[in-house]
Length: 258
Image 1 (cartoon, one colour):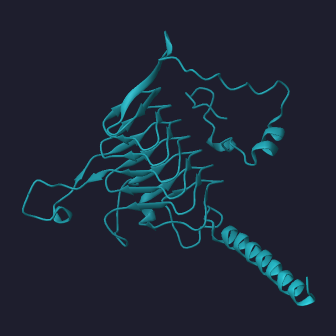
Image 2 (tube, one colour; image 1 turned 90 degrees about the vertical axis):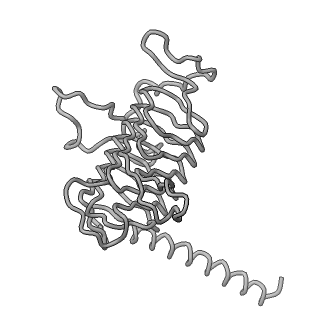
Image 3 (cartoon, helix red, strand yellow; image 1 turned 120 degrees about the vertical axis):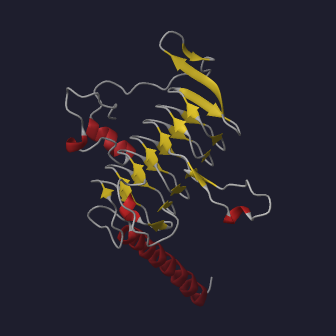
């Protein structure tokens, strides 16, 4: 290899390292949190919550509330109301609870009420909306017909798989699994797995019978005795516990805190 070629390769390597270091700095500087809100002024933004950079489209954030210890992935769009700049009053239209993880490229579009309870995790590219277009008038473009709103709720501890669509009127219970690419509307009971378009129950759990049909895979191994919280934190890379002020008092009915 000639000296000139070594110089060119060295320059490209240096440029690559500088670009990656610069992008890491931009991502850290552009992330949004309660301590570093940037231009966004949410109705609520809890401690230890972070919106990764780059964010998606976020508007009317004064009508959006996000709890503590939540992670909002890259390019997640969250909107309240029809258009930016609306002066929306009353309770927040979109509520995301404590300990939630919203996967990258997800869209949450709220007009009346979307409630995502504590510890809900989603895969990437999930779509959640409380509004549908109407098509009653066959002579008028659908986009110009008055839409219909129905509140949406996703119960605590649920998992929403990649590419799932949660439609207006969906009332999803606690610890529900929504399979990838499922389309959900209506009521889904607690401890149920739904799949398909439209989504149908494919597995459910009761105290008397456990999971039916039975789960075929072996259960995950329990955490070995003696493993400290600090060791788990070092393994996982981030703290799953809620901050002390968010943990319910002993006389309350708390959600499980990891």
